[in-house]
Length: 277
Ligand SMILES: [Zn+2]
Image 1: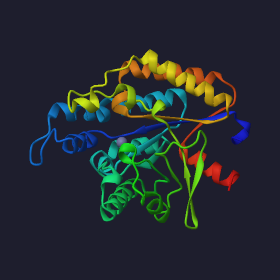
Image 2: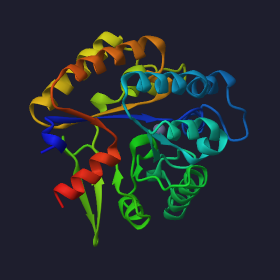
Image 3: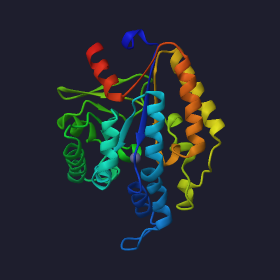
């Protein structure tokens, strides 16, 4: 089923929300009212991503000789062109993650298209190539998103969870590959924490041992069933020292298994379209 008769496929993906998503969260939940300044402490969590976490992850991927995929909001590409170029230069994939990380489901049709186009312009302008994939900010899609992505020429989308293997959305005459994930394999579920808003971000900080156990079992199950194991990570969450040690143990475990294809989502999407048109 997989390339070169691999038993399963693995994708390492990183959603680079920086402090952009914190601003949206603070506004949406009313923690910061329109016109009020943002807490520099809250924003500094996102700045850690740019200062420490992404460079640490890049070093980690180099050490393991692996390629990952970084989903980048257009605004981050504009604010941190050197960093985003560096990710690209190292051969990792860059995917589209909105422009200002606004949830597409909460936008008007015009605003949604604007976010998509602005994000595309920012990434294309910087990298001189078009991103092939999209992951929705806040993992949410509007009823229009798939059609918009097809019209803009995207190869794949990665915000849904209907199967353990890639699948294809048929939108009018066009096809869009889905690279599915699940909440189980999202670091944010276990590691995100902030004092406010309390209901959303005070679920506690999980032990990395517990997360390693959940991720390893999910990988083993999908390995046996020849599935796709997609890890969705946020540099500001996974990129802390203790959690990177956990990721190191997981990757070492995965690398010991025979027939695992560790690759980028665009490679998988291209293979899927060719093999199962
Ligand atoms: Zn995000």
